[in-house]
Image (cartoon, rainbow, N blue to C red):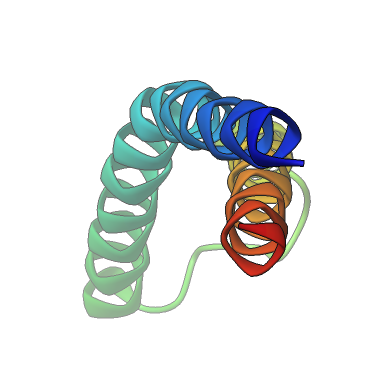
Length: 90
């Protein structure tokens, strides 16, 4: 049982590292696109509200990046669950 719990702890730590690494870069890019989109919205409002609410390439990219971050977060979550189970079984 001790070996199995150690394997779960090591697997959990690896999944946390992999998931965090997988989510980090898309999250940074997502935040940068959000800031850029907010800046464009402020500029368009200043110009008189010329901006439409149609889909843009940036909004589609933000959806894709958000999905990648969610997948990375799910991997981290599975890693945390593995580590908790490993510590409980220990």
